[in-house]
Amino acid sequence: MTDEIRGTTHGTAPTPLSVLDLVTVGSGTTATQALRTSVDLARLTESRGFHRYWVAEHHSMPGVASSSPAVILAHLAAHTTRIRLGSGGVMLPNHAPLVIAEQFGTLEAMAPGRIDLGLGRAPGTDGATAAALRRTNTLNEGADDFPQQLAELIRFLDDDFPDGHPYRRIHAVPGPVQATSPGGVQSPRRPPVWLLGSSGFSARLAGTLGLPFAFAHHFSAQNTVPALDLYRESFRPSAVLDAPYAVIGVSALATDDEKEARRQVRAAALSMVRLRTGRPGLVPTPEEAEAYPFTPMEREFVDSWNANVVHGTPDEVRTGLDDLHKRTGADELMITSNAHTGSVRLRSYELIADAYGLPTAA
Image (tube, rainbow, N blue to C red; front, side, top):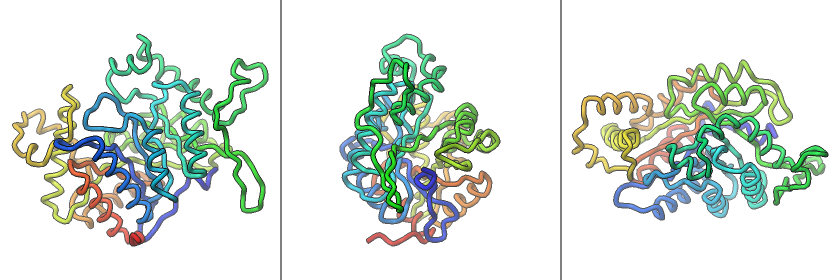
């Protein structure tokens, strides 16, 4: 399974480049338009040589239309042929492990050898919504039980509960698909499991279990290097991975003009201001952000947030991404380009691909 996890570089990129899609909905647009943009973006990045395309589970956020990763991934699988597709991630405490195993077993049957299962231990929403998802008043139960839930999920994926286990006769259907090696040997294959995190807990757990790890640098930049160090120090080779493999999610936006990049990221930052202050909504336009009366505290937040967004002209973005790669030693960069308009996001990935000399789209 190591070969399915590790990416390959294209052009002059020093590390594989991938996509994290939040399926953002801008003011004046609809979720339908956002999902159509996701199809266009998956096709574009596949044609340009990006390695994988992940969508993230969020709930009760009007500006993020990715509450159902498995549904979106099935749609993207029908419109692509090569790029790896996955969750970045499914929030395990929100779901029964059997349900996730069935969903991603189905995806693997639809797109054999192209599916990743990234898992997070946070709810991906506020406490009240988490309670509605879990139907329990114990909101911390899922996060505290994460290692046990993970072990159960992997058992369902591998269909290998031991004799005497209460779930021994329960099977996640579709189960592991039969894959044929270049030598003609058939063996069962299921989606690789990744752990996601923004702190040290999942980093240590991923290392101990010998699993690939994805870190949310785009909203927890101060913890990136310590978490990656902890992951590498904790790593133990496993049946799925013989050496550490770490991906970092990074917010990056390239435009033809540096000033336009600043306008776009300021609008995305306003969206985060509203989310952090309990006013989630659609992603505002740059014009809305220019007219918004930021308080001193909000301006401080915007400056801090945008300091971790790599933005500007294609050359500036490439320089910023290369510097981040050198600083963290990440094995792969997963780029999320957040903007009000779908065409701006598409253009950003195209410009980044050009900056790295990735294959030209057919």
